[in-house]
Length: 161
Image 1 (cartoon, rainbow, N blue to C red):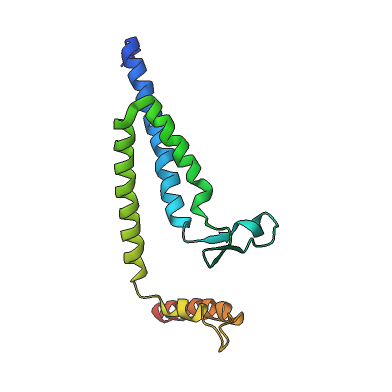
Image 2: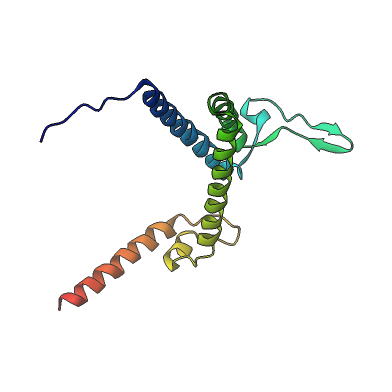
């Protein structure tokens, strides 16, 4: 069997490069949008991050500080990627990747919400147990994991007889 070099016309080569660029930009867009949504539950203090005192701005009777969602850190990458996709592929390309991203973010949240409904394993509850003041019990994780391993060894030994 001989390998033949596949020749492409210049138009086919440009189309191939455009498709590759669209896939790469779409991957960057999708990944950053999904990660921004997931880490968006983390709220951080902009002032503390920069080593500043809280602003305590009094606006219309409300005291406001610069507390931000962690998703805001990487969201500019999504905007820049959107601009690049729009520049090369127009609004049709942006619409296509935006709809796909929205659907995948929805799917991710459905999966995450569904998995949070699963009952935890007994040893996991023990590992994450707290005292009356809500403090973690440092000796429990070791004991729980050790007990789990010990129980498995005991079952293994019983099956050997």
